[in-house]
Structure formats: C-alpha cells, structure tokens
Length: 101
Image 1 (cartoon, rainbow, N blue to C red):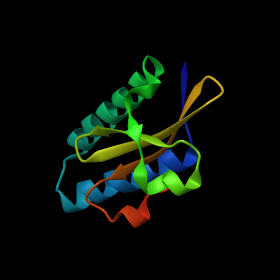
Image 2 (cartoon, one colour):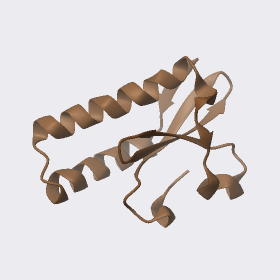
Image 3 (cartoon, rainbow, N blue to C red):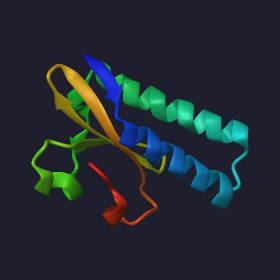
Image 4 (tube, rainbow, N blue to C red):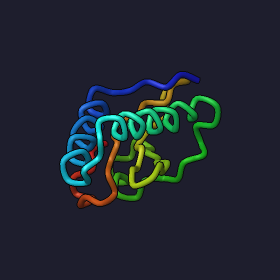
C-alpha cells in the first residue's frame, strides 16, 4: 500500500514544527529529527494500515479517519483505494477543535 501526504498534512506539520521550535526551544537539528520520526511512523502504515485506532474527533465526517501516535503528535489518516492518505499531523497539546480531517 502507498502512503500519500496531503497538502494539508504537510502544512500542519510545518506549523507544528515552527511552534515547537519557538515555544519548546528545539534546535533546528532536533526539529529535523522530530520531522523524520513523524514521517517514519507515518510511512510504517504502508505495511499495516489498520494498526491505528479510529479518530473519535473526526467520526462525524464518516470518512473512516484513524490515528497513530508519535510522541505528542497524532498522525491522522484514512484508507482509500489501496492508499493511505495522511491528512493531518496534530500536536496533541492543542485543542482538538483545531484538528483537520
């Protein structure tokens, strides 16, 4: 199965990384390492896409969104036509209302 990153997911990840660099005082190297670990975790869905749990906050969309966790991040995704679409990287220290499907 292929893993596809939506534009929204990339934008969310970049915003979250800017936040942690500024607020958490991460170095650029630490931010890069965090980004790599998030991509590695998301890419692991190619092998076992059903390992994530259903994402309760997006249940009303009825699109089958699921989540896996890496550190403080939820990686939000859905499975369609033999592909895993990563739709959001969500820092769980934020309000769930900011989560995008």
